[in-house]
Length: 148
Image: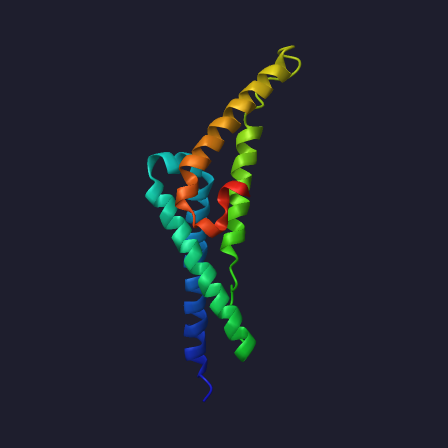
């Protein structure tokens, strides 16, 4: 039995509403991940919650892909690939932190390169210690977070 036009409109509206909520959740997750170096020090449970949500979405993606193989249908917006996006966001955070240290230019200081390298070394070392000792505990072991 085919759905009537009003039922179809309600279905499409609900799908759009769910997709909008999913997009809002994703924005919040990426925001927490962008601040992960601070979050893991202050409230590691928040980071763990974000990783759990992403892990749950990865499992749902796998189920949806398996169902597509059987039925040929996959819901709109699937697979979300949030795990891939999570690592992109984390890599971007590292790059942004390093690029943010470049405050002195050649014209302003003749020792600019020495200072830049020292600041970068300090930030990288501090961040590696935090990642190794705190952040790795927030991610499943099979993510191999420290060695990525």
